[in-house]
Structure formats: C-alpha cells, structure tokens
Image (cartoon, rainbow, N blue to C red; front, side, top):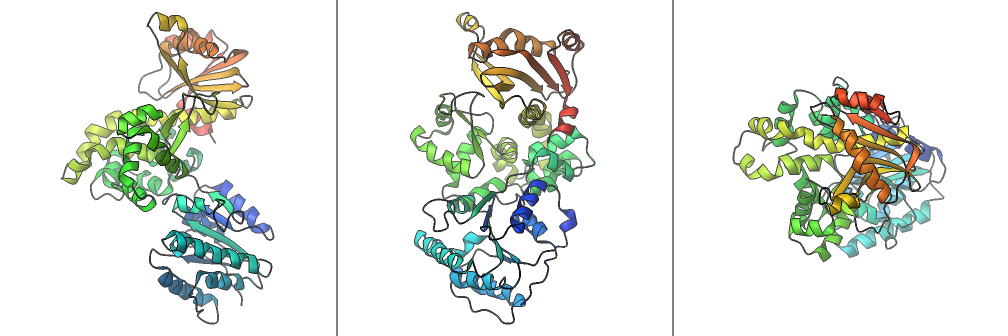
Length: 485
C-alpha cells in the first residue's frame, strides 16, 4: 500500500507563516516525534497551514463534521477508502487510529485529522472514553508505524484540554497554538496599499487571514459596509458565532468583551461595567484568555501580582466589532443603511481604533531596535507626588518603556493622528512622565533614548527641540511599519 503525494491547488496562494511551516518541517524530519495538537480559533488559517505543509508529501487529510460519532466514523471510512484496497469497517475511534497507523507501515505518511473534537462525543464520559481509546492505540502501534499525525481543531478550550494532566493524551502531544498573523506577514495580503493604509486594515482584521482577505482590496468604506456592517455581511455576526461555538454562556462573554472593547479595565472596573460579581469574573476571564481573546496587562516592570493588573481585548477585530457594530446591531438589522453608517459612525473615528494597534507595533519595533532592553511595554502609574498634592496631575502613562533590570533605557510615544506631533509630547515626557518613572523606581540610564513616532510628521518646534537633544529620535510611522518584523 503506497500513499500518493497530497496536492493542493491553492498552495501558491499561501501567504506568510514561514516560522510555523519551518517548525512543521523540522517535526516532519524527526523520527518518532509525538503527534501535533494544532489548534486555534476558526478563521485563523489552520486548514490552509496544514494543507500547505502537506502539499507534495505522502499525506491523508481527514475532515470530521459536526454529527454523531458513529456517523463521523462511517464518513471517515469513506474518506479512507481511496487510500486502501478496501473500505475499512470503523465502528470505534480506536479502530480509526489503528487504520491510520496501518497507512504508514511501509512509508512515512502525514495524517491530518481536522476538527478532531467532533469525533469524541459530547458528554464528559464519552470524551474521556474516546481519548482513552486513542491513547491506547497510539501506545500500541507507535513503534510499528511511520505515521506523522496532526490532530487539529477550532474548539480551543477542548484542544487545550488535551494537554492537561487529566487528559489521557497528556504528555503525548506537541502543543501547536496557531496565532493570528503578525503585521509583517499580513502585509502580503495588501501589496498594493501603502503602509499606513495596510495598518488601518490590519487593525480591523486582527491578523486573521479570513478577515484580511475580506478587507484587503477595494475602497475601505465600501469594503466595511459589504463585509462587516451590512446585516447580510459575512462578518456581521462573527463574534457571536465564535462564542456560540466555544462556550455555554455566550451572552456573559459578550458582555465582558464589550466592556473591554473601549479601554482596558481592572477587575473592579470590569465588574462595574458589566454588573457582574467580581468574584465570578475570574472564571470567564480565564476562559477568554485560553481562547486568546483577552490578555492581562501590567505596567512594564511590575510584579505579576501587582494590584495594577488590568485586562484588555487581545483581538483587534473584536475591538472593531464591539465599537462599530454591536451597539448598532438592532438598527442595522432593522434596515439602517450600512454605507451611511460607515460614513458617519466609523470612518471619522477609525484612527482612534487604529491607534492601539499602532502602539503595539511600535513596542514590537522598539524591541528590535533596542535589544539591550530585556522588557518593553506600556507603563502607567502615579504622577509626581508634587503634582498629585497640588491636584494638577494624578496619573501618568507612557506608550513604550524599555527596561534593563530596573533601569530605563528607552521611552517612546506613538501618535496615530492626522496632525503633526506637537512639542507638548516631548515636554510632557521630560517634565512629568520620565520623572514619574524614576519616582516609581525606574531610573533613566545615562544614555537613555527618547523615541517619538508620528503618523503625520512632527511640528517645527518639536523638530528643533529634537535636533538640540541627542537623546531624542523622531521616527515616522511609515518607517516603523516597513521595518517591524
């Protein structure tokens, strides 16, 4: 029995993910490597990634569907028939994995089981029994087969659970969490656009390939109305569908994500915004963290248990949707014109949404430019004591701070506005923010750099001040966006 090379017609359309493909190729070359547990949100590009990887290799790709396990196994037997001299009789998941191992008894074969959780049943007992059967088969046949197995799924929490100590597959799978594309890769979807426009569209898509493909070409206002805002648009209800497929109380998770869409919040503020008991929030926030939709945020240099811990949205598309779609869904569903909505309620304030993504990318670029900084992140904390006592300033925030130990080696501010950056940005840093950093225990190094990044350039006064201070570097947004990796 010989397995033919897998051919994928869209292989030449694949964009980015060089590191992910390199990791898979390294795994392919190793003998007896554990199976891979490949998971990530729907639309993140899992199917494209494993098909690109399988292209040109002896491979079998099986795709499960959302039906009963018995029906699943029968359909998978049909999918396996072309690769075997007979149609296998598969009535139990252990038998399926026995057949898959037999495919590779004479040659190395890549086998992908997509949407693996659909094979496991729905009750905890069914899932545990199915996983135990899979584990027993893997143990029994691993030395008699050259199979290279990938288990793939979009049910993030269930796939993550495969790694847990309570799972029969604990310690037997390599975890491979597929993240959204970084900006450098996402640019490949928009080669005809200038870097500033690329960032705007990236900040809408959140680096998800499916969303990028939807918003990458055509006039932006037209694209947004057609793909996201119109009640019949393919992405109009996307976050709701995502949560309904993943969690049991989607309304609760929607409330939390909506509360975090505008600004980060600590537990107390989040409790106030959602009306939920703060003691109950932790469970839901942990689940959203596992799904990659929320992340913890602390001032750079703060202890992991710092009281200043906040939560923030970790997905730009969700931030966009909760700001520009969710509050207006009832009106849009009732017939409000999508194009008019985009014109009056989205485009005029879209730069405010994009600013957060720009700040994240600036921090990423600063890590490249200043490798001496062990940590780079946003910082916030109390204003200078003299300012607080006088009730002039109470808190300070700095977009980017790079630390080497407790020493500050670089600070940066990034402004995504239509006006040239004013001198006040530098003045505030020098008079209030850097001294507040020092008050918090982060003393500036003797050669600390000050990096100011502007979308629309810099005022004449700021340019003169920067020329007179060797610490200050002015950088355009276009420079950042073309250099960041």
